[in-house]
Amino acid sequence: MKTPNLIFVILISTQINSVLAENTTVDSLLQAYASQGATEAGAEQGKYLWQKTFQPNSEYEERSCASCHTDDLTAPGKHIKTNKLIEPMAPSVNSKRLTDQKKIEKWFKRNCKWTMGRECTAQEKAGFLLYLNKSDTRC
Amino acid sequence: MKNTLAISAVIFTIGFVTIPVVWSDDDDYWRGMDEYKHRSTGVAAVTNTVYREECGSCHMAYSPGLLPANSWIKMMSGLGDHFGDNAELDTETERSITDLLLANSADRSDYRRARKFNRSIQFKDAPLRISETPYFRHEHDEIPGRMVTGNPEVKSFSHCNACHDRAEQGSFNEHDIRIPGYGRWDD
Image (cartoon, rainbow over all chains, first blue to last red; front, side):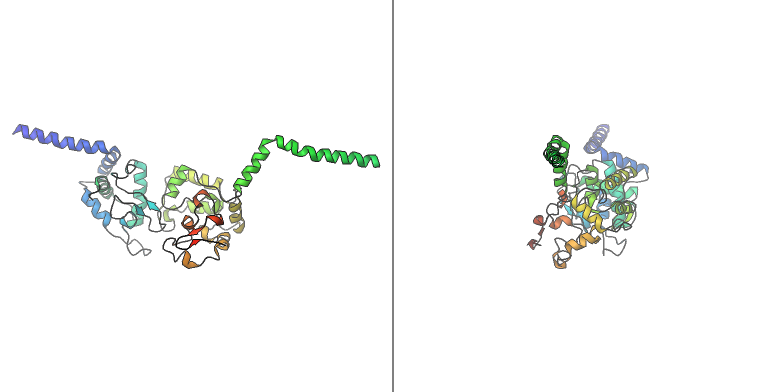
């Protein structure tokens, strides 16, 4: 009975370690969000919010993250107003993504305000990070 | 009298011959001329990496020489609602970008087109849209709306580089104009 338990613990911790090793920026942000009250945020929550539409004002009928970034995180997006190309969000195809903490916070602030008309909560940001970080060609 | 005339003529001639010689010794003078010729082509290209990153992520990194200092001060104090988008920056970045804008604004620039923008704007005015300045309007008054606002590949006069191939390099030369779906524009 003891041995399978031990194997289980080892397996889990190796998995956690590999996730942490993949992206320390994301990890330290997630820890910060947890200390701000984020609990059990999951990638699914982030995905849901990414695709959810809002109408903070009447300029556009509806807005969502996908308005500019598209639903496919591995594909490039286009700024809805200026047409400017936006590089893919998924770190699996764009290694520069989710590597700069300051940059991540800057865009959360700007884009949450544009999309939802308010800043995102720590819980919401944690969800987005997990969703973006997990995204690969299968999403 | 004759002598005085002759002496004057000699001095005059010597002066004429020596001035260019003296000038040609001054490398800075000629370098200055080259720079002037180069500068007189358009507006300064944006090379600052912070500016390119912070301002050029969502739209073309417009040259600071396209608007006067008053406009940039107003623009930078209202980034919370930047033409409908939130473009807030941290204090340090905001200050460094404002410094860059003010040091290179249309009223400070040596570039020919920057000076034209500046001359067209009343001193007290602080337009926020480059496309609403008198010089811009004058330069674009012959272009039918269907080619720009009615053109899905252009959408707006704000998208300089949709038609001006070398806008990002600071050149708005007529020969570099190519309107998507319509081809070269000949004035």
